Length: 307
Image 1 (tube, helix red, strand yellow):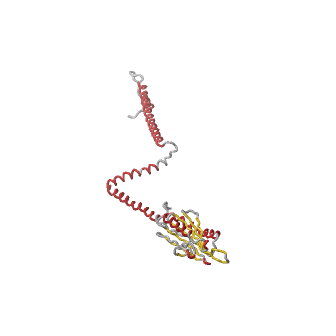
Image 2 (cartoon, helix red, strand yellow; image 1 turned 180 degrees about the vertical axis):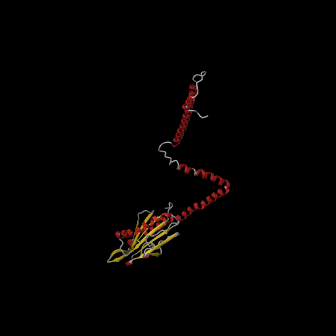
Image 3 (cartoon, one colour; image 1 turned 90 degrees about the vertical axis):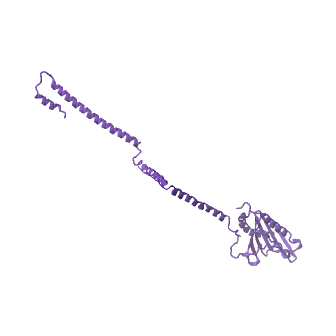
């Protein structure tokens, strides 16, 4: 039954005559109508309040999830987007592993052994390293220089001696001839051991010092040491006596220098028609020294320590 407004109720009651037995009946009816209206307004207000409270609670929850003002909604959005594929791929791999476990493990184990040949490749590197390039003499490949027989002449004239190295593992020499009878040569002698190389230089020194003494008037020999970055250095200068005007002179100078490093001996020679003097010997040694300086560092391979 729809409610009746107060005005409509009063209009209806105007036509009703009051009953003497129930005084104030109209007022009672009006009071009841007003109470019903008040109750309806209170219920409506309560419903509105409940709705407002619900909206406020929702806003509070959303605000709590959003966080601070600087946490923009655009930032969290990509993060779930990238995170979500990870769980999706994760479940996908277990089923595939469950369906074909043997296939997956077999592929993995097959590729592991294939890495073994790759690791074996470094073994090729030591092979290249263990075979160094041949020792290069100072004038190897230079114009005017050619391979020659090994000749280490000591003394001069009839006393000329060529000390022959024995038991060598490598032996070579190069030679160049110049104008006016001058010539130069370089060489390398490698022995099985350092002891044999030391013995060879000891023989050279002994033979040179045993050449005919200048007092006999035939030969003049000067033996000296050559300092440098090597185990032992030696120089031998010799010339033949020339008699002219009754004044003794020694000409036809030949100088040989040696340097030993480990089991190897390198040498240089220079021969000319110059007279043997302290100055000429020093000049020839200085001219030959670059050959020793060039080869000696390469001979570290013939030492126990190696290069």
